[in-house]
Length: 335
Ligand code: NAD
Ligand code: UD1
Image (cartoon, rainbow, N blue to C red; front, side):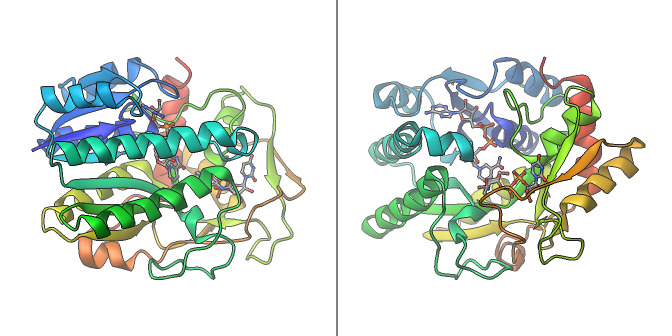
């Protein structure tokens, strides 16, 4: 079985490629390195003993994409490629709409031309918007994501639903990720944001490494157990394995299906900080700061549908993720 992975040298894509190769899939990657580096391919080879076939290509480029489908027998596709920085999307909405939506349209058109019928798409918990109570359940009416990034996810979900409606032969698994953290236990691949990290875990590891001075905890006056925001942090290796479970599901021709991929429980910013300190035997320099605009107090997944229908659930803990993120930061991040 061969799988085309768009965005396969990125953070979640690279971890998924490792698990796909380990499970015996043939993998073809398309990525234009807009947010990743060629070194990731060497790391994948070191971990798995196999270097996947790679095309340095913008997924928007239909001519290039057709060549990939001509040169390889593609059975299934996982579509990770996309821009993902929430803050940047507010200042560059056109880039986000162009990149994320056009790449999906090109991919769908080429898949149709080559009669490839199974697609897994990276969506986000952000599609539940501010309107819904947590835990989020797949059957909820979707909300209005506040950022252009989040809106691209909502629009793409709607596009995929329409395309499936017109062509029920196309099977689509939309996966709504909660907060991915952690890294491969080898320390050879992980999340490597450029510049100042926006997300909590890369900020923590950079403070621990002395690359940044102080971690700012955004607000401790929320209506939560300890006053800091609560999120559903999922280890990226568990998340990667969720994609393999979704590919298996698509083999049963389910049509359009949606799954939350999360742990099903929330933990607070302070809990994550303390987990990181405990497991790595160090102290983090942090201060309590004011709230970050746009943050919701708490949300997590109802992850029972994925367990029931995909036979998938998370196995790794936040502590595992703290250990693996730190291992990655110490050995390879930024190289
Ligand atoms: P990432 O930036 O590490 O990986 C995305 C990859 O896609 C990068 O390697 C980038 O170079 C590539 N890419 C982007 N646009 C491209 C294009 N037009 N053509 C070819 N390659 C292109 O991000 P990630 O964290 O691995 O996220 C993967 C997917 O999951 C994204 O769609 C993201 O929106 C979604 N997602 C991520 C998170 C998260 O917290 N990381 C949460 C929810 C959803
Ligand atoms: C954000 C995005 C979400 C995206 C996800 C990727 C928003 C509103 N949401 O989620 O769409 O899918 O990233 O993982 O931007 N925090 C600090 N100090 C920091 C950084 C973060 O206290 O330096 C806190 C935040 O206030 C939040 C929690 O840590 O409560 C997690 O933040 P973050 O990692 O940025 O993820 P989200 O905001 O949940």
